[in-house]
Length: 161
Image (tube, rainbow, N blue to C red; front, side, top):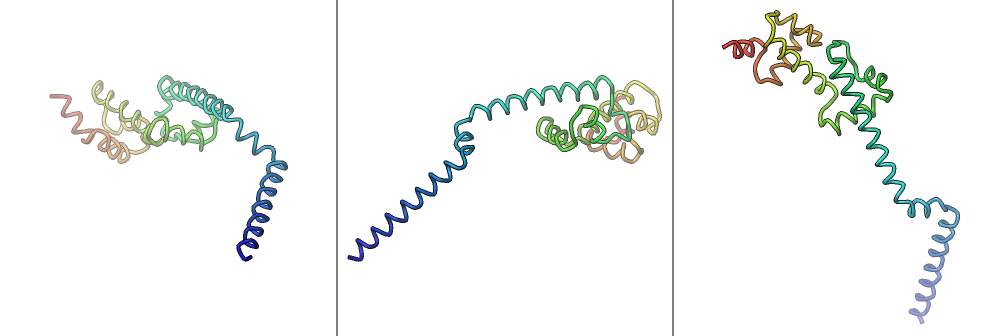
């Protein structure tokens, strides 16, 4: 007798739960549409990849051709404005696509420029720092040493041998 009552209660509860699920799906057709539209997600990913490659082209143009990194006052928001996106998206681009932060990317280019000046000129270090886009000699020395494992003076001595 107790088992029969338990079975009836279980059956009523199960029926009620299924009715709720069916009613929810009936009222929220968008849930069913989202489950069926997996191809649209692929299109979104594809268009995002196209957008990223377009962004990469713009970034290369600004940094390689126009040498934007030589501006000591350069900010992420300035670059974002120039490429037509926002700071958050551009920051994510550098972190995910370049595997480094915006400032690491800029400093790498600045150090490359400084290395070229050290090899090809007799400029003083403060002039090289300034022409490479660093806003102070101390920042230049610190970043250069971190990237090249030696100070700018040591680097110059090594290449002059």
